[in-house]
Length: 329
Image 1 (cartoon, rainbow, N blue to C red):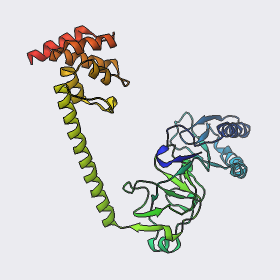
Image 2 (cartoon, rainbow, N blue to C red):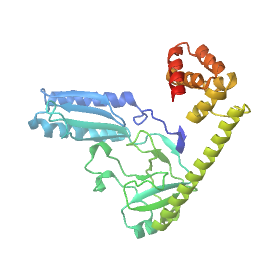
Image 3 (spheres, helix red, strand yellow):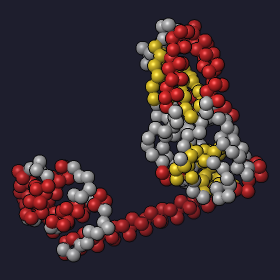
């Protein structure tokens, strides 16, 4: 399955064969127990990997456990899995010393990127612009090689957002059109815009984005957001005004996007159609109580009664109290 770039979900899909990974984590736990009878190993699922958490390790057995893990690594690589581990120096005293081993798929979920994706780096720009980008493993990175949880094989990482800093001062734009690379979700992030490829990217598909261009893009996006917000506000103003006049059309309007101003207009001037539209999405009883309160305060008894019929748990007493307080104010 190939997902579109914006089709990422929150489900844990980072370990494609979860049963196999769980079995391997169990094997690590069993072998650790054989090496160190006093330890307490446990397999569990993490955010982006299967974990084998080995607690209460005898210091004298540390080297033997790490040797066992090293011996298992080549076989896991054949199964498209990364095995990495380190001592958890932040483990509670009751569980320390503790070794945490991570098992995750190398090739996660295929994704179809947009035409342009972005790569951040501190590497020499001239080299990239002449030779292109070459996949490199975490072991070659001063920043990532000491983080066992984020270990990765030779790869190139990219994101769709050209504004967010992602591990480097320089920003390069990659044109994926005609590139032919296969892209995958970043093996260390269960969701979000980070993707990766295991194939080199020639210089002909890469250009550096200067600081001035980045600043211009940022300002253009701010202006676009401001314009969009202004248009949305104007549209809401017109909708609220139409509700108050009784001329509003609810066709094509998303009730889930209705904010307080729309709700207040419906409470004061809306009828059956408006109330039913507002509650046609998943709303809480608290929101229903608020609508009843505002309807009572504005004297819109018809709307108030419709809310009671739709939500039997809404309190008439609370609505009356709210209306009384509003009149005093």
